[in-house]
Length: 231
Image 1 (tube, helix red, strand yellow):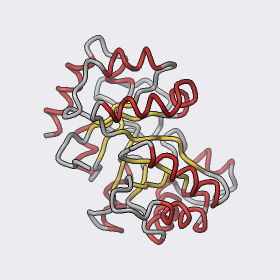
Image 2 (cartoon, one colour):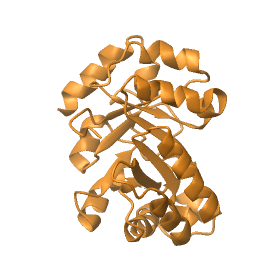
Image 3 (tube, rainbow, N blue to C red):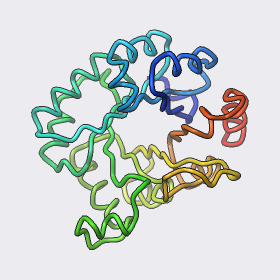
């Protein structure tokens, strides 16, 4: 794992591998990491992930495993076999599931294992609908604490919660933050968002950035500008 590289993880939120590779072919592994999510993985499969790894990109496999402990453990092993740099599970799977995932990745060269807390598309209204009588930050704290107890490497959280998580669990506990938007961008379905510069100031270790880069007229130019802004 080369952690001297960029904090930027470009979300390859494309419908197929050809669309994704059109961007990937313009990028360099030193400039960014790459995220493969559910749609692209479902359409293009493990072979596509391996092709990115073979191009020397660090790949964050964002499948948010949430199932019975044994199933999640086996899925984590399968993901590690692809050579990914990072993968995630849902904290709401509970302590037994988180512990099983951690135990499945017990080699020194295993990928980072992080836990999803509260999706950035969710807020107080969604928590209320689920019968959860907590604020978003309280609920994130609860879920992050389970990840810490299971000895995971960090969490996926809003950048708005990153500073609190760092104060609770220390600088070595990773904060991977989606919901990153440029200052001029008010679009999208995510509610708990922040600009790249503010997210890094808040303590985010890695910024997951999709549409601001992938839908830009010149994606590489935007990537380089963000990289310069946060350096």
